[in-house]
Image (cartoon, rainbow, N blue to C red; front, side, top):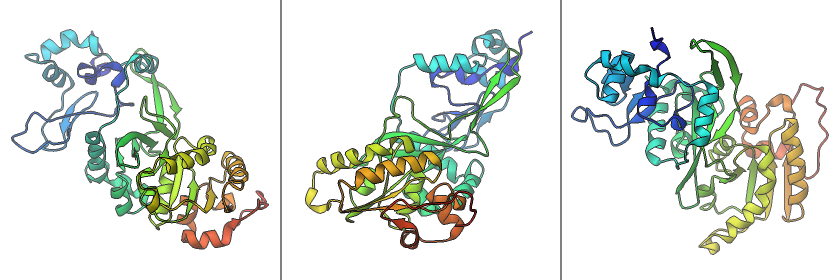
Length: 350
């Protein structure tokens, strides 16, 4: 007798390499269009059921859902072919992803993730995590932030607002772990995955947010470590930029900024940078990366400031601002230095 609880019905409609992480759904256009408009795919196909977030139509039983996806008369016929659609192990799915071809993300997917983050019946409550970091609804909407069921989604656009890729910040309270199953479908191991990841085949290091920075008229920029840190500072009107993929990539930002200005079509409306503010994370990798960037930037810019607060106040700038209630301009006055400031890591105050 087959263990039907191991059947993953998503495999009936997608290549193995395109299956979403964990139990996250695939999205397709809903066929029940008479009940609602479906300009963006709203039919969610989970491993064991189908549900449309647009009209509420769905199939709750696994074999009936598989039969519908395969065009079979009933669940009885689905049982006969169910073995072809058993859940892949983590190793098998990773191998499938390596074999599959890459495709770029679409704005349709970005909009679906936005809708999920704002739907109170789906992921709407996850906005609280962003609120706790000081990111408000206006910033969430203007930055096209969303949620795919396991991670916050952060679209990355070029200076002309063309979608280039999508970054994912795993939701610690929902995802962030990869489950390893045994042959009976039981979880035998949970592995913590990287906090940030990128779209498959589109995980290049890119300046973020290029579309906002291109329209800014300030003669300075603040280099931060992470897209959400940049979103938070732009909320205060601060021209913050980052290189995607973390502290290890921030050394590329000086060359990237040079290339950015060289590529501007209207150079007369975007003044060059006179000042650079280094504001990377305050853990050891962040401090090491900030030190190298600070030293290199002093050879290029008229003024370079390194923002250095005690790590006890928060690892990154977003957490620090949320905890202290400070505005960034006040923080810059208090913790901005033109040299490396000594910080006693044994102290707890900030």
